[in-house]
Image (cartoon, rainbow, N blue to C red; front, side, top):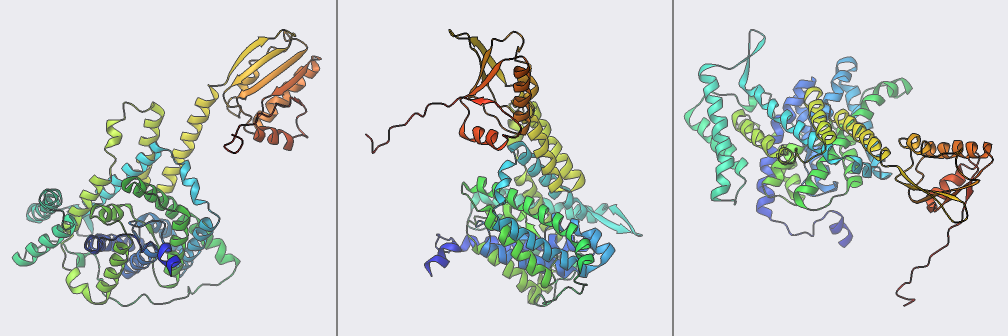
Length: 513
């Protein structure tokens, strides 16, 4: 029993009021977003709510950290639009379930740690781009359809929704100055709802997006042929969906770690996501991943435990069962105002304060990632491009750091003391430092302040050895670390050089003292 309590973090001190109120607020903000993305992809609207319930509940209980909220996210849904249009909804269910299997494998084999390779400028670009997406998505509420065309609102309808949004924002901003007993977002939604209801103000409501009434998510085995051809169709979409979900999820987890000064488990989050998506595939959900906006709402409301996510998921299910008549009358202006504040809170304003202190290449990477995120709405591609460019910049900067100190000792042996890593980016500069024709008969390359990093480095040493041998001279390698010697040993068929054995220096331990 104690092991179970530890596993689900149920022993931590919980502020039940904050958790329940935060969960209710999260449910209110998650619901219209899940509905909107479902409609955008051509799915039945309830698929979005089912995904919000399943993802929210499973990841709240099994996920990598308390406070992180998952649901039917647009980042993963966008991947499935083409599959929906070409093959139909049954193939979508299969792709979602297969994506879940892939995510579980990533977690089981502990591959979630590779999120550490994402540099801080990429994180800044990812978060800022996502904040812009959240903000611009709210502008759709200021539009309407006239004669089949989408146009901006004007006149009284525009002033009404703008006024209600402004009121919502004002409550969210000002209420914490007077009290923090209740989440300001939830108070704002309730106040605006009562004002619209009490005065009969004509404005867009949740019902104008879609109906939200229904039953428990029905069990459903995808009606598709289970053969190799189907796998060829489904697998690419499943792989991309799994990658997008894990990328956004693990980056969100890192963001929560920073906001709460705690640390979650990336591999556990991968398994939880995968489990939830498998259930989505068999219980008519559109799948999803962690949602950064709702996570920020949750944390801003004071939630720090798993209870808020469970409350949010169960609230959505309750709304599907019995609460639809009330929820459908909630003004979209209230939800829009809350999400605008979420976008403002999500944006890394600190990136502007330190932009003049950051290296130019880091500024470029951050801006590029943000632009790709905003223009293409492809979070995985944005992060991948950012990581690749950052890696290339790092390789270039590291390549410029290779240096060599040269001297001839009393016995006539010439020493090259190498500083900086020897790898594919630095081999050219490394090779140019040697004066083979002018060097004496015996040469030592000292790697005390360097290391042989890859196959390009081995090949550079191999060619250098050949050149010294052809000149009738002997080359020695000295002070190679254990991993470097192992690397050269594994490549003994490629390189043949003399490695000087270094003395072993024993460090005194407490026992020896």
